[in-house]
Length: 400
Image (cartoon, rainbow, N blue to C red; front, side, top):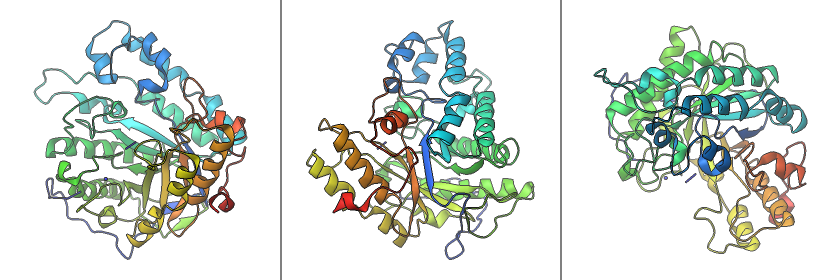
């Protein structure tokens, strides 16, 4: 939840970049969404009691837990996949809470062949068996009439040192040709899924979630973005899928998926603009958490200044990162916000994430957490009156 200089590493097909011709396809006018976090990559802070019951005490990540070779681990993960997201959750969120899009964080190991060592000596210790549950969740989302975005949240080698990558690696190993290559295989697999079992529900595939913000630490990332675009589009071309014109509010039948990239301001300094890797339909992902390195003044007034004076989405429009969806945000805070305070900062954020030429909506993190805390649990926040039962665009008056 935490911004590339792009030396060429993989150098696949040159492809082309969609500068003036960049398009996008959103089957809704405004995205109102939630993340299905901790379904396929468990973040222990979100479900500490369940994690402990799975044998995870003292384990930072899924990799660490599976490295213990505990006999009950496979069954514990099967139970987790059976219960963390249910059909009732999906239909309830769509029909009772107005959600129209789900963001699904995935590890590369959802494609199990990518975890095996090339010399045949074994495999990396990640969960096996999650893929059928992904298909099940997608079928529920489709049945409810909503949409899904698939995200490479856990990249090969880990893109940062954080449990949300599935491993706590103090020396993130994603940024080399071998692991970029594995990520491209994941992308091709997800593309085939999007146009087969995921047809009519998967509207986007995201290249990688939250890479290092320092471009000096991400050699080759810009080239990876271009190669990712080419991998998805070339796979679609094999299936006879083409990119149509920009479309909003209409569900297409046989259109290409949106390529999704973290937006231009995620990295600081001299880095590649992801718009330069766009090919056909593209959308951009922004994350904003005031509780992590946010305003100097951790107070309601400080948060108002932080959210209401933020011009990041205007900057995205200037950088051709259009449309942008704020795919991760929450009500987390460091000043003990009351329900009234949270209501105010929710209105401010929803307003900023839906106003301006680049803004096309938001996706809350998360659909739930174990303790039902209103700062991270969407339905708990709505049920407390902090956010409206049917999601909306916030309130400009909250920023006056």
